[in-house]
Image (cartoon, rainbow, N blue to C red; front, side):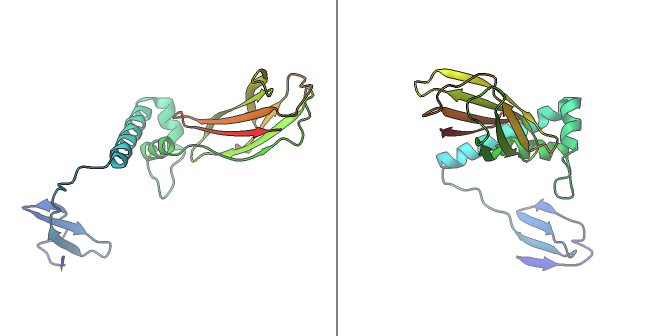
Length: 187
C-alpha cells in the first residue's frame, strides 16, 4: 500500500481502474490494489450469517417506513450509533438477556411475586411467566409488569399452587424484532 498526500489524491476515495483509494483519519490517502474475489465457496456458517444480516437490514428498513417505530428507534441513537436504522438493525441482531430471576418470594400463594431482571440493547416488549406442575399441567401463566426502571419486571401469582416440589417456572423475554430468551428453573 502506498500513501499519498498531494493535491491529486486529496478527497478521493473508492475504486478507480483496479486501485482502491482510502481516506485516513490524518488526511492522507492510502492506495492499493483492489481485492480479488474469492474462488472458495462460502461455508454454511458464512451463508447463515449473511442471511441473518440481510434479515436485520430488512427489519431496519421496515422500521423506517413506520413513523412510530422510526421515532422510537431514533431515541436510541448516540455518538456511536447515529441513526434509528442502525439501532433497529442492532436490536434485530441481539436477543434480550435475562440477568436474574428471584423466586424467593413465591410460595404458591395468590399475590406472591416473582422478580425478573432483564436487559436488551433497545427495549424488551414483554416478559412471560409460565408455572407448570411436574406432569406438565399448567398452574398459571401471564405477563410480568415492568417497573419504572425498565429492567425489573414483577409477576404476581393469580392461582394457588398446593405443591411446589418439582414445579417448573419458565421465564421468556421478548424484544420488538421477535428475539426470545428463555430461562427455566425447577423448584
